[in-house]
Length: 412
Image 1: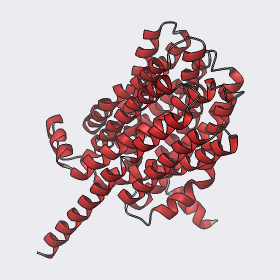
Image 2: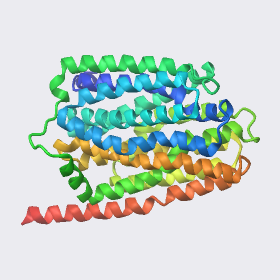
Image 3: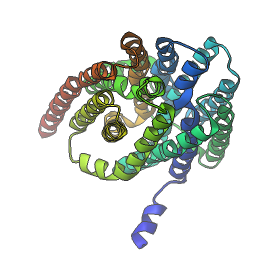
Image 4: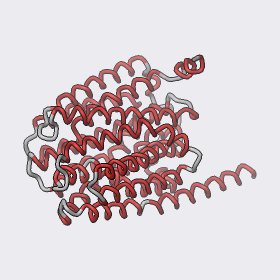
């Protein structure tokens, strides 16, 4: 008990607030956004390929937005950028409730991706700012854990509200994000110094580009992540449409919501055992394991229409997700200089290219093969996800070379 009290005392209030806020806002997010693809297809009558573009457009706008948001947070502080992003995000969710035209959804989802690309890396950078090096993996894991608790709650609520046939639930999501913005404002008033840039070394945006472009480990990490995220992005777009519309599934919307629940519960049960086991490996090697798990899961989605095969595939996908998301944060934290932490976490938003292209590719495959050929659709996506493994392997080799060079310099 004494050790537990000591551990709790070491947790900064900013960490507690951000993790708790993440739980509630993500519950609201998963209450609505995973059902958007089904709503656009069944209610709006939009073709799967176009739906893929709408869903993917969110990631496209976030691709470069994260870099600029992270850079800005290094320059003016974390809190002002976070608050602005969450307030606009709240307005975006309210806009979804009243959207009627296709272009409305394009614009709103574009802003959704932009807000997410600003908030996510900055919140992770802030968590790293107020946490000691040895505790950061645990803090990143706690944040990811909170995301998945929210993911467990949200779809169940969304199903009961009929989110797949109505956008009214977005108003509730908007209210949660507005409340979160208020909580961050209170944090800023009490711990303003924690949100300030701790860099004595000033740098321009051109300097930031130069540093990032010269980091070869970061380059191969991003290239591998882009491909892997093409596979991971299928859950909210291609898989949702496939289960909701394929004749082989009697109640595919409900099955999809249960699979999201399985995803969240698996994280709750396996996150800490998996992360404790995987930390013994090199980060790039761990990312290769996670990438292979994504590919195996995608293949499983296409192999069978049996619910237990789909559940098993979702468990495998979730293990890959745990590894990729947690170890990506650890790797970026290791690579980033202290004065460029926000910029490096922001650069990770470039993997959103995969989130953007993935739903569009999945939508094209649905149109090409139809809803009765799941093996062709998800088999192709599995092969696509596998192509990220060589990038992580090259990145691992570059990391080893860099460490050898640093060791030689230390000896000299």
